[in-house]
Image 1 (cartoon, rainbow, N blue to C red):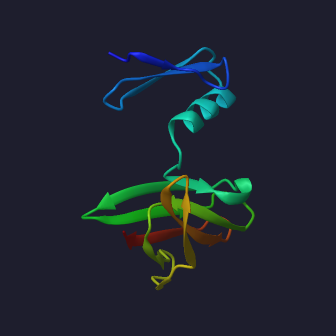
Image 2 (tube, rainbow, N blue to C red):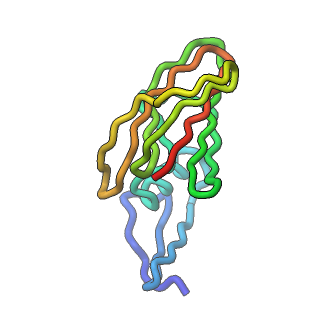
Amino acid sequence: MFGTKEPSASTDFYVKKNRNGGMAIHLHRLNAPTLRKALDAAVKVYDVEYESNKVLRHIHKIKDGTDIYLFANISETQIDTYARLRGHMQLEAWNPHTGEISKAECTQKVEAGTDVTVVRITLAPFKSLFIVGGR
């Protein structure tokens, strides 16, 4: 079913693709670095990725064509970072603690041939924020 074997830059895994665009990845070792390398080989642009390696919790849902992201800071320190979201979007920031809705601070760019929206995320300790918008 998955006929052609793609050589990887690592011997930790290999990728097989079929002519219909399907892909299978076999990990020789199951650990976080190997999984990250395999995912990087499979996906050119992630759905959500943080700059500066800040760790936030997030959930992404699509409802009636609207992208809804919930970002949560579960740490004891403020987080001020940028999240790269796959797709060209016009975004609003919805504060669930105050009910305030404002235009999100964001820019558009292209990475690996894919539209990306970069949005600033600033969260106090133990706070959350909805980022909502359409493509």
